[in-house]
Image 1: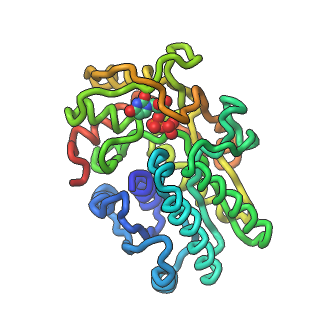
Image 2: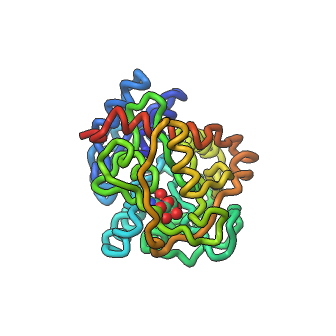
Amino acid sequence: GYIGSHICVELLGQGYDVTVMDNLANSNEKALRRVEEITGKKLRFYEADIRDRSAYDEIFSQNEIYGVIHMAGLKAVGESVRKPLAYFDNNVSGTIVLLEKMKEHHIKRIIFSSSATVYDLTQGECLTEKSPIGNSTSPYGRTKLVIEQMLADLYHSDARWSIVMLRYFNPIGAHVSGRIGEDPNGEPNNLMPYITQVAVGKREKLNIFGNDYDTPDGTCIRDYIHVMDLAGGHSKAVRKLEEQGLFIYNLGTGQPQSVLAVVHAFEKANGLKINYAIAPRRAGDAPKYYANADKAKTELNWEAERGIEDMCRDSWNWQKNNPEGYR
Ligand code: UDP
């Protein structure tokens, strides 16, 4: 998928061997071929579902697996409200199967893709790893929370595990080559793919969900992070797996941006105009939150290097060169 393909580029570039397991539910195998093209390296691919027990026996016996990066989650907030069981089945039950099979095959190192949505967003704007969690506004958010709690319980039952949970803020951008990027199915839910689809002429206009929030320009504020910086955070987290323990890190820039600021940054970075209109608020949106990413800096020696201009330029470079995504 979007984030996984960029992590593959990063890890192959660092000299790691990479084996990918994906059911292609929200991704495209072409992305993997392009990862190989970008890096000049090969990876191994198994098309399999996270709940498929026999697939793990095959993968874990055919390959020497040091650790697992688990990002096999459904992630559309609105869809999770309509299909909660599908979300709990894939995300929670899937994680249970993965962890059971890892245990059976004596693999006890895992990095989990968590999300800033685990925080109780009514309790504060600048979030540290110690900020209160809970009060999720969607089934999607609750699956992330349950998995985090399950991983903590697993560690408390057996301190030989190395578990790193990475709480992503808002990943956007693409690899600088423009060969891999975000390719949502159908109408995008997220801001940046919507902007790029308007820019490329696939959508008529961007709806900005509310301009009457208690923020300087009235639109919501988020912490957007370049997907290659996010990928870099994963390679630092892989190093952390050398230590046994349970670790949690925010991956964000600590530099909040409003929706309108992102639109204007996109226009400026790419010399384009984005047609937009102000629409009603979207249910469940918190007005403002962003990361304090100091812990990742201190303990992982990681910090985001790319700014909003890089994110806007690289997102557009991907969309412009691939108007239909991978199709
Ligand atoms: N947003 C918007 N129009 C869109 C998509 C998103 O105005 O078509 C706003 C949304 O209300 C939020 C911000 O952009 O304030 C980021 O939304 P996104 O879905 O990308 O990420 P979220 O923060 O919800 O995880």
